[in-house]
Amino acid sequence: MITSKDLEHIGWLARLELSEKDKEEYAPKLNPVLDYFSELDEVDTEGVEPAYHVLQLSNVFREDEVNTKCSLDQEEALSNAPNKQDGFFKAPRMM
Image (cartoon, rainbow, N blue to C red; front, top):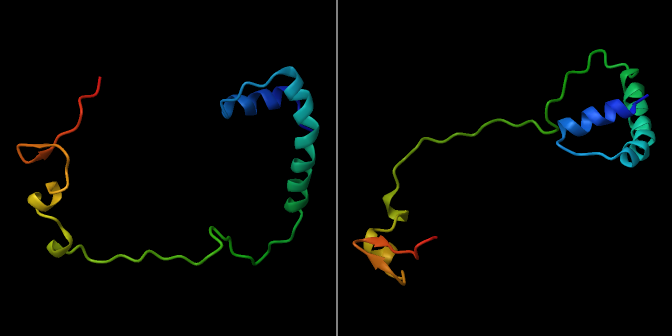
């Protein structure tokens, strides 16, 4: 059974400020959720491997290769810039 003090601690962990009304309202709603987890604890999981993810994932890495054909040279990169100065984009000053 979850208490008002438990809810206060959960709210503190989640950085939520709960009023007394909120605590009274949510405590009865959270208890059935916790009861469901206790039902799950009773399930026989003997021989079942833990599933850390629903899909079998493996990392696919490629070698890092320099690819200059996709890069723009400085002149191309600045060709559509409305304002440029000394080979750089010029942006409005931020105050």
